[in-house]
Length: 292
Length: 260
Image 1 (tube, rainbow over the protein chains, first blue to last red):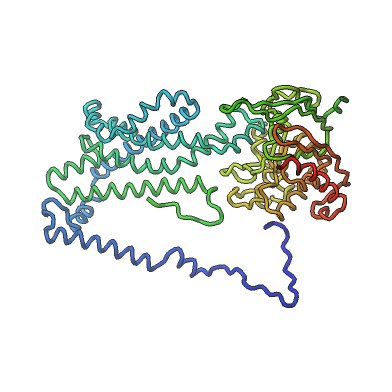
Image 2 (image 1 turned 90 degrees about the horizontal axis):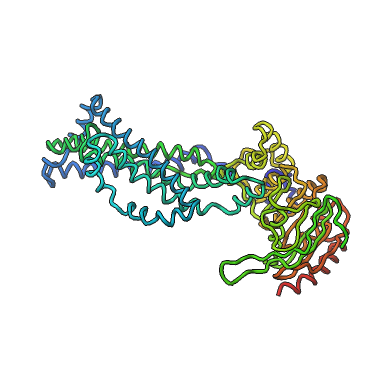
């Protein structure tokens, strides 16, 4: 047992210790985590992609009027990084995604737990949930324009409609799969129904659905940008549509890149939060948590 | 039958029928009567499915007998009690809590303040020699360590009755001996009543004051024998004790007939 006192091994003649564990040196550890060959490979792949894009523009594989060039896109960034309107659009889209994500995830958790707890409720509501989950939510965007106009409400609702199912379905499954021994222990210790929910069900479910909540955060951003394509006062989606309408392809490409970078950042931030909250899952070995 | 001693446990003509959803009702426990004096360490052995765990669940107040009565200190058991410690084969620790916070769970249920819980949990972890691991999560502990955390959690409330359902069966042979010895030392200083359910006959004889053998389902009591090996005991030293070997062989003969 690791904590009992360790006596040095008394070796009798003929015995020897074959191998002893050696701490990897600092250089070895750096090499393992950094791996210069792979880093170099990554840079090469990105450069190859940029070269291909550039050639597609230069050689007019696609009509140059319909494709932004790498330099044009870059120049757009250089000229617009301090453009207040771009930042405003970014914050509008982000806030739609954020509120849609918060509301959709909370509702998904709440309803998922409810239908798992009250089976009869699930029996009578499951046809409706199955139907709405099958509805292509993107098709709702133009309808929400009719209902809510170009206000943010419609965008948030679309995000909610996407996020809700991403979170609700695994929540319900996770609530049904709580380790029965963990519940049994709570009961034998005299825990009430409330104790059982707060100390066993809720933490078990949250840990199983955190991945879904992280996935939903990226979908929230995509959903918000998409909803804006159909009409909005401000936002990255409407900026994108406005740019394509006047064939300003550099701006269109740049806005697309902004959305992609935002998605990666959101995923990374929520991933860090997940890693922090789930640090108990790491045993002695450290695993990479961030991956899209 | 004689009156049960004060403070003991009495099972009188206990029968339990499970209303199975298909295949009709199942008779799990058939007419079991047992008197367990306060402070006794009793082991129940028997083949799988003989109703051992069912008896434990009745004592814990999780299920009620179909017929007969289960009494603790001359009071009918009607629900879970706050002075019973129940331990399972799996450590069943809450993986998102550290060792210390796992031990704190029963104390939280009893409404102790945060500093009180922390102090008590650290004392208990010290008893099972895990005070250096208080802030580790279960995933960072070995199986034997996890089971010791579970022992600390079971004992956190100073239970007068310890119900142990195969608590050492998931441990490897060497770890088991260590944990059993620690456990014995804890019990020998406690004065608590212990009911240990186990598949492992040697374990029953090594640890208990008395061994009860149950028949295959429906479970009845077939054999009841006192283990007159003096205490304090140490599991590893007892293995070549002639009295231990004699008792184990004797009980094995009885049990073997039930295993086919």
